[in-house]
Image 1 (cartoon, rainbow, N blue to C red):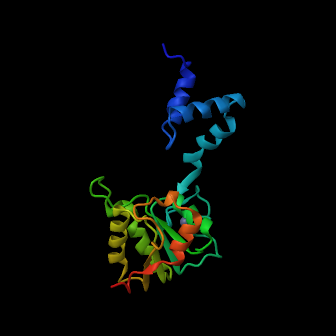
Image 2: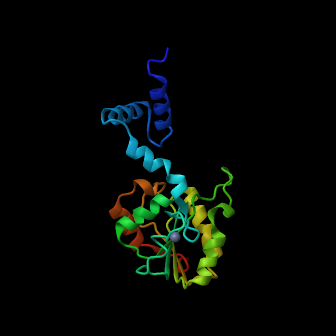
Amino acid sequence: MDPYPPVLRRCLEELQKLPGIGPRSAQRILFHLLSRGGAGGLAEALSNLERDVERCPACRAYRNRGEECPLCDDPRRDPSLLCIVESPGEVYLVEATAEFRGLYHVLHGLLSPLRGVSPAALGLESLLRRIREREVEEVILATPPTAEGEATASYILEILKERVGKVSRIGFGLPVGSDLQYVDSQTLSRALTGRRDLMKAP
Ligand code: ZN
């Protein structure tokens, strides 16, 4: 017989679906929550996620449903610069460097024929529309330095090079194959300032 009561077993199973959470961590989190009288606040915050949050149709990062986008609608941002990242988490990593005050485009994935990810999934249509409508002068390709990240960057460069004055690539100081989520803020900061102009590269 399972030593856990069914309610706790269900919680453990749900916790273990989270990235980086194994059985031991799930157990630690669960008993921590129980010792503090439950997880009412956490449960309430999470239960409204789908209802209250949506992808911004312009940058594809998240915003409160039907409200202004804290990135696109911020008048202090420089609309001539646009940074392309793989996932929403990377928007906040770039923000933490304070090196970039432009706009973003979140791909929500990388091109991968093996995993069936095609260009249509990356929202490039809406990216091109924005580039036409707003005066974008430079696009920074901040996909990770992995095989899929490089392939995605090359593909986007081909599409953009006739349409934007400058397309650049982060890279300086980033270990090859690294996931940007694990790169520290200083390294990412150097990678942004030391970006290469791909239109000038041989
Ligand atoms: Zn937005």
